[in-house]
Image (cartoon, rainbow, N blue to C red; front, side, top):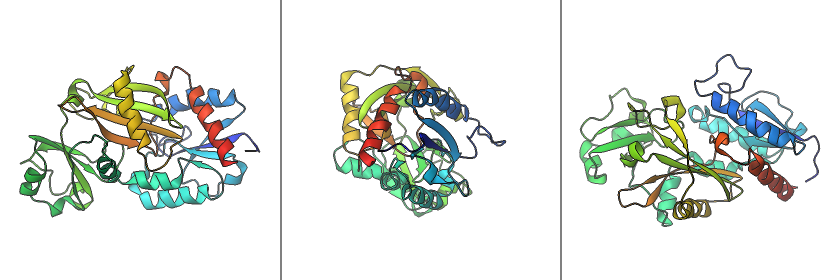
Length: 301
């Protein structure tokens, strides 16, 4: 690809851009990303520029490409978000590509991966929680504790954890949207969730995340902790198998796995839209990402 300006748009949201007066509690992760990725891109002649994805009247043609970064409010307006990405992608190279992001937008992609033989967590799906009875859940999920998540959601927001007989209150948003119900994985509280970061299909680094004592969610917004993690070859092979099963190649991917009671690592999420990539655990200090971006730009040129 012929470089026009060296400018690459790093898509964020109004809750993460540094100039915002309404920054999120976890916006520091956006700052970490820019602090590490920015110099790595600059060393190769690129300028990474943060832009809220819904900013009006952006001259996208002035950029060489756009990368979806911390667009962490997309779940509140997924249709508008996807339409905006498709519009940007029609003007300049965009990663991840809108078609892959659309596939990843609904967590029903997990059912597709399970059908391909990817080790998974038993899941009960419903268009609305209101369509299910407690008996339906007891029949579909063999567990004492369950976690209910929105089919379209991000950051652990609007989830519910409890027993089969203590469903969320009737005013909870889950009652009137698509949901997925899974057994609570006990290893979350012990080993934690293992995240594997890949750039252009190549493994870069990993991190182990554990929840706060009073919670089960591992995100920093809920005071989860992060730990350096060097995966065993077998664990890395499990993550690579998930990457190889994705609907299309991804420029960046974070594969979140959790260990089942049988010792097998099962896929919890494939974060292909706006994952935090834990750059402080990246020994290459962002160089792996930039190298992948350069290969991608060459292919799109």
